[in-house]
Structure formats: structure tokens, C-alpha cells
Length: 132
Image (tube, rainbow, N blue to C red; front, top):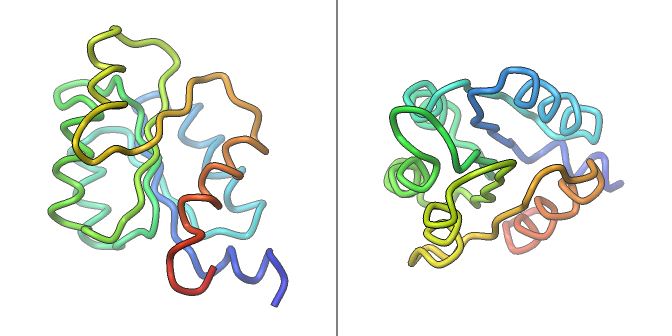
């Protein structure tokens, strides 16, 4: 099985209110062979996660209404097996520190990041998931 075929079995959810970023991330993952969807708010992200049950979620730390750390905590309730990667272009030091040290201990990718770095981070997250 090729890397492209393996990637196709994994679903990645991107949650970012910046439509251009979310849509670009979806294109990057689809081009790499993953199934990918995006949500432009935490509320729609949670609904999408409950319906679709992604293997990985890439979450902007700075979401409106519910920040990314709060979203990640809620996501763990609905999709406990989902691997989480936070990302941040700009954020408060307190929120970034919370994302890095929260008890879930998920990685944080600072933006901008090259698409290959983004793909490598998600591949590393999924390496322990059955099928990768």
C-alpha cells in the first residue's frame, strides 16, 4: 500500500474561522490523499466532528466564541480517539501556553508553516493509529 493509499483512510478536520486558511489546509490534505473537511467555527466544528468522527483535527488556538483549547477539550468528549494538533498564527501568550501545557498535551504548530511540515506533523500524530 502506498503512502497516498494509506493517507486516504484517514479523515482530517480543520477548524479555523479564516476561510482562506481552512480551505487551503483542506486542499493540502486532499492533495496528499487524506479525506479532509473544514469548519469555520467551533460550533460547526463540533457538529462536523460528531457526524464525521475524524482521525485528526487541526485547530486554530484563536477561535471566536470558544477558543481552540476549549474546543479541543470538547472534541475529546465527542471523539476521544481523535488526534489533535493546535496551530497559531497569533495569539496571547497565556492561550498559547495553555494549549502547550494543557493536560491533553497536544502539539502546537506555529504559523506560518510549510505544507510539508503540516503534513509531517499530522502523519506523526496518526502514526500510532491503526492503519498508518
